[in-house]
Image (cartoon, rainbow, N blue to C red; front, side):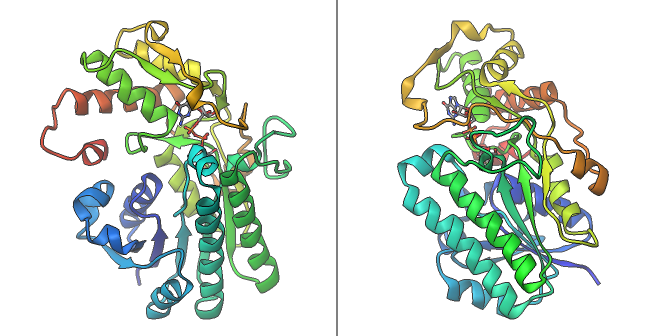
Amino acid sequence: MAKRALITGITGQDGSYLAEHLLALGYEVHGLVRRVALEDPERRFTRIAHLLDRVQLHPASLESYPSIFNLISRQEFDECYHLAAQSFVAESFADGFSTMNTNINGTHYMLAALRDLRPACRFYFAGSSEMFGKVRETPQSETTPFHPRSPYGISKVAGFELTRNYREAYGMFCVGGILFNHEGPRRGFEFVTRKITSTVARIKAGLSTELRLGNLDARRDWGHAKDYVRAMHLMLQQDVPDDFVVASGESHTVREFCELAFSEVGLDYRDYVRVDERFYRPAEVESLVGDATKARTVLGWKPTYTFPELVSEMVQNDLRITLGQTEGLPETVRGAR
Ligand code: G4F
C-alpha cells in the first residue's frame, strides 16, 4: 500500500519540491494549508498548481491546536514533514512575537496531536543553520552548540529541542534536519538570492538600474532546495531516529553571489549594487558553513548542484520570466518550471 505523508508548508519552496519527490516515489501526499489559501488558490498555490490534482489539501491553522487535532484525527499518516514556519529572519526582528507563536506553538501542537493520535507516525522538523548563529566552531556539525541571533533562530532551537524531547520522552520517531540555506527558482523574492537574481534580470531587461542590499560580506552555505528535500525523506527512512546537518560544505559571500549572478548576463555587479543600511540586521549571522559528513555516510545523501549551477539556474529562470517568454502565468508558477 502507498505510504501516506502529511506536509505542513506544502505551498512553499521546500513543500512543493518535497511533494513532487514523494509523489514520484509513489506516496499519497496530503498538505495542511490555511483556509485563506484555499479561498485564493490562484495566488497562494502557484508553486503547487501543477500538482493540485494529485495532492489532497486540508484547511487547518498552526495557531489552533483543535484544528490540527481534528485534521490528524481524520486520517492515518505514515510520515509528517513539518515545514510550515515564518521563515524570513528579517521579519522575525520586525515581529518576534508572531514568529515565536507560529514557529514554537505550531511545532508543539503538531507533536502533541501526533503523540495523542498517531504515535507511530514519523515526524520531520525543519531545523535551520540559523540555530548556530554566532558560530562556536567552523564548519558546523550536529555537535556544534547553538547560539541563535534572531527570534527566528531562537524559535527554531525551541522547535528542534521539542522534537528531540518527544523522541526521548515518548519514544516517537522524531527527527530534526539542520538545513543550511537552500534556494532555487521557487525561492521567495524577500530572500537575498532571489532578490539578486530577479533584480539582475530586471536590470538586464532595462526595467531597473540598481540593486540595494545590506551586508555583502555575510557568508552562507548555499545549496539547491531540490537536493535538500531528498535528505528530509531519507531521514525518515532510517532504522533509528536521529538529527542531521544538510549542507554543501562550501561557503560564499553575498558579494560572490552577486558577482556570479551579474556575470551570468555579462554585467559587472560593482556598477549596480549599492549598500543600503536598511537591509542590515540588528544582529547578523556572519558566517555559516556546514559539515554534512553524517548525512553523507549514514543517509548516503549528496548534493547534485554546484554553486555556479544554482546561481545560473536562478538567473536564467528570472530572465525567462522578466523577458516574458512565459507570459500570462503568475510569476511563481513560471518560477516553478
Ligand atoms: O537570504 P537571507 O534572508 O537568508 P538567511 O537569513 O540566511 O535565512 C535563510 O536560511 C536559513 C538557513 O540557514 C533558513 F533557516 C531561513 O528560513 C532562511 O531561509 O539572507 C542571507 C544573508 C544574510 O546574512 C543577510 O544579512 O544575506 C544578507 N543580506 C544582505 N543584503 C540580505 C540582504 N538578505 C536579504 N534577505 N535581503 C538583503 O537585501
